[in-house]
Image 1 (cartoon, rainbow, N blue to C red):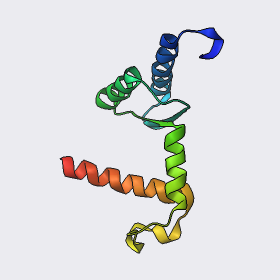
Image 2 (tube, rainbow, N blue to C red):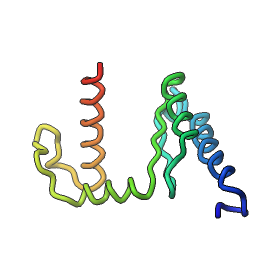
Image 3 (cartoon, rainbow, N blue to C red):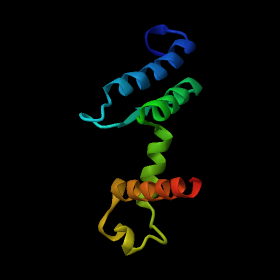
Image 4 (cartoon, one colour):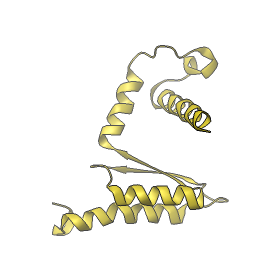
Length: 115
Protein backbone atom coordinates (compact mmCIF):
# COMPACT_ATOMS: atom_id res chain seq x y z
CA UNK A 1 0.00 0.00 0.00
CA UNK A 2 1.32 3.51 -0.78
CA UNK A 3 2.66 5.78 1.94
CA UNK A 4 0.34 6.94 4.68
CA UNK A 5 -2.34 4.34 3.94
CA UNK A 6 -3.66 6.22 0.92
CA UNK A 7 -5.54 4.57 -1.89
CA UNK A 8 -3.90 3.52 -5.15
CA UNK A 9 -5.57 6.39 -7.02
CA UNK A 10 -3.81 8.97 -4.87
CA UNK A 11 -0.45 7.33 -5.58
CA UNK A 12 -1.19 7.66 -9.33
CA UNK A 13 -1.76 11.38 -8.89
CA UNK A 14 1.46 11.54 -6.89
CA UNK A 15 3.60 10.50 -9.88
CA UNK A 16 1.99 13.10 -12.14
CA UNK A 17 2.40 15.81 -9.50
CA UNK A 18 6.10 14.91 -9.12
CA UNK A 19 6.50 15.39 -12.86
CA UNK A 20 4.85 18.81 -12.65
CA UNK A 21 7.04 19.77 -9.70
CA UNK A 22 10.13 18.91 -11.71
CA UNK A 23 8.78 20.77 -14.75
CA UNK A 24 8.30 23.91 -12.66
CA UNK A 25 11.93 23.67 -11.55
CA UNK A 26 13.31 23.37 -15.10
CA UNK A 27 14.25 26.68 -16.72
CA UNK A 28 16.06 27.63 -19.89
CA UNK A 29 18.60 29.88 -18.14
CA UNK A 30 19.07 28.04 -14.85
CA UNK A 31 18.84 24.32 -14.36
CA UNK A 32 18.22 23.52 -18.00
CA UNK A 33 15.26 21.83 -19.64
CA UNK A 34 16.02 18.16 -18.96
CA UNK A 35 15.11 16.33 -15.76
CA UNK A 36 15.26 12.71 -14.64
CA UNK A 37 12.90 11.11 -12.11
CA UNK A 38 13.56 7.68 -10.65
CA UNK A 39 10.55 5.64 -9.58
CA UNK A 40 10.16 2.20 -8.02
CA UNK A 41 7.09 1.07 -9.93
CA UNK A 42 7.11 3.06 -13.14
CA UNK A 43 4.53 5.65 -14.18
CA UNK A 44 0.91 5.72 -15.23
CA UNK A 45 -0.78 7.29 -18.26
CA UNK A 46 -1.37 10.59 -16.42
CA UNK A 47 2.35 11.03 -15.81
CA UNK A 48 3.06 10.13 -19.45
CA UNK A 49 0.67 12.85 -20.59
CA UNK A 50 2.29 15.37 -18.24
CA UNK A 51 5.69 14.53 -19.77
CA UNK A 52 4.37 14.83 -23.33
CA UNK A 53 2.64 18.11 -22.58
CA UNK A 54 5.80 19.59 -21.05
CA UNK A 55 7.81 18.47 -24.10
CA UNK A 56 5.39 19.78 -26.72
CA UNK A 57 4.38 23.05 -25.05
CA UNK A 58 7.47 24.04 -23.06
CA UNK A 59 10.44 22.13 -24.60
CA UNK A 60 11.05 20.41 -21.24
CA UNK A 61 12.19 16.78 -21.34
CA UNK A 62 11.23 14.72 -18.31
CA UNK A 63 12.75 11.24 -18.28
CA UNK A 64 11.15 8.67 -16.00
CA UNK A 65 13.26 5.65 -15.03
CA UNK A 66 11.97 2.67 -13.06
CA UNK A 67 13.98 0.05 -11.21
CA UNK A 68 13.68 -2.19 -14.28
CA UNK A 69 15.13 0.57 -16.49
CA UNK A 70 18.11 1.05 -14.16
CA UNK A 71 18.72 -2.71 -14.07
CA UNK A 72 18.60 -2.84 -17.88
CA UNK A 73 21.08 0.04 -18.16
CA UNK A 74 23.45 -1.61 -15.70
CA UNK A 75 23.17 -4.96 -17.50
CA UNK A 76 23.81 -3.36 -20.88
CA UNK A 77 26.76 -1.39 -19.52
CA UNK A 78 28.33 -4.57 -18.13
CA UNK A 79 27.85 -6.57 -21.35
CA UNK A 80 30.46 -6.43 -24.11
CA UNK A 81 29.39 -3.97 -26.79
CA UNK A 82 29.37 -5.21 -30.35
CA UNK A 83 29.55 -2.69 -33.16
CA UNK A 84 30.58 0.30 -31.07
CA UNK A 85 33.47 1.79 -32.97
CA UNK A 86 36.07 4.39 -32.15
CA UNK A 87 34.06 7.06 -33.96
CA UNK A 88 31.50 7.03 -31.14
CA UNK A 89 34.20 7.29 -28.47
CA UNK A 90 33.08 4.00 -26.90
CA UNK A 91 36.64 2.82 -26.46
CA UNK A 92 37.19 5.67 -23.97
CA UNK A 93 34.10 5.05 -21.81
CA UNK A 94 32.74 2.44 -19.46
CA UNK A 95 29.68 1.84 -17.29
CA UNK A 96 26.75 4.26 -17.42
CA UNK A 97 28.69 6.76 -19.54
CA UNK A 98 28.88 4.22 -22.34
CA UNK A 99 25.17 3.36 -22.05
CA UNK A 100 24.15 7.01 -22.03
CA UNK A 101 26.23 7.70 -25.13
CA UNK A 102 24.62 4.79 -26.94
CA UNK A 103 21.16 6.03 -25.92
CA UNK A 104 21.99 9.53 -27.12
CA UNK A 105 23.24 8.23 -30.48
CA UNK A 106 20.14 6.03 -30.90
CA UNK A 107 17.82 8.89 -29.92
CA UNK A 108 19.53 11.32 -32.28
CA UNK A 109 19.25 8.84 -35.15
CA UNK A 110 15.57 8.19 -34.36
CA UNK A 111 14.81 11.92 -34.50
CA UNK A 112 16.59 12.25 -37.86
CA UNK A 113 14.73 9.27 -39.30
CA UNK A 114 11.30 10.55 -38.26
CA UNK A 115 11.86 14.02 -39.74
